[in-house]
Amino acid sequence: MPDMVLQLHDKLAVVQLPEAKPVLVKLRQHKQLLRGIIQDSQTIDKQISLQPENILSIFPHKLPQFGKAYNTFVEPRLLVEKLPRWGNICFFRQLSTTELNNFHQGLDLAYRQFIRRNNLRFLLPINLEVRNPRGKMVGMWHKPKKQIEQYIEINPASFITNPHEPDNRRGGPKYIKCIVTHEISHPLYQLYLPDTIKARWVRLYHSFVRLQALTRQDLDAVRQDLIGSKITLRQYRKAAEEETKLFFDAILTWIKDTHHLDSRSLDLLMSQGDDLQEYWPHSRLHLSEVKVPVTNYSNKNPEECFCECMSWYAMEEKLPKVIIKLIKRSIRAVQPR
Ligand SMILES: [Zn+2]
Image (cartoon, rainbow, N blue to C red):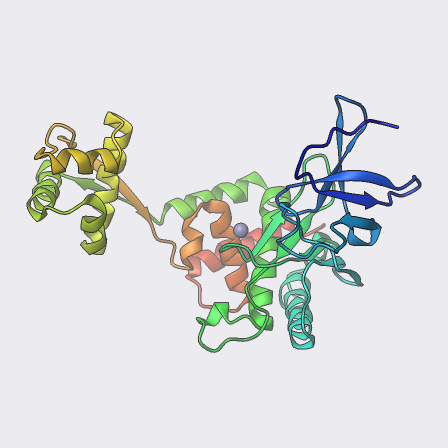
């Protein structure tokens, strides 16, 4: 029997592992899963993923719920379902009947109007995971290293249509379709799209990058305006117009990279009467901005731009001709022969 070193406040569970005697494990914090540690020997910790049905007892005696269990972040798997077209779906979140219907309808839309219509059935099966909302993320595709299996997490705030949200965020079946078609475009880009076509997406993305040059006069005007206003950098930025904000951020980034001074240090200098001339950029400063005419998120990088465009295409939303052309070309390029 291995020794387990326990410390005050350790959380413990008794777990039934497949084909083994029940073991006592320490619960350990991990990003999303309930993890346990078995101490194999005095030096080696073996990490295991725990499923609620395997936990025989937990101290104190209570099954963990999402987010709050004994200093550990837990998200117990509640249900596994198998859908003929998609594959396994794991639910880490309790959905009401309406939510569940919306979810299934959304999947169905994604299948019929994206996968089947474009002959992309080779992307399936894929593991779907319905998870609890966390942060801004509403979905994620991932393929753990050394694994063939791929996963799509779906975790919007709601599965219920909300008329007060913008069209593409309303939460109902269409929103699920939007999330799923975006996420399943990631493997399309990373694993199937030929480099020749990927390069076209990079060039297309870059065609929406605008480069601008700030002249010496522009730069000094911002500095004098700032010094004259006698407020902090943060307050100045908040009150500034969109374009000035852009300039201002570029200037602050430049000062940070060049002089290693952050805004707090600059505020301090200003409060002591410094006009910042010594640290301000003197010659031209180039700044760039990307505006893909699809969604804000498409501005992130060429891959996200691809996924947003594919999803927008599946949603039958308006897209510039040049993008539609490249989408069709991409779909042709990945077709099985
Ligand atoms: Zn994405």
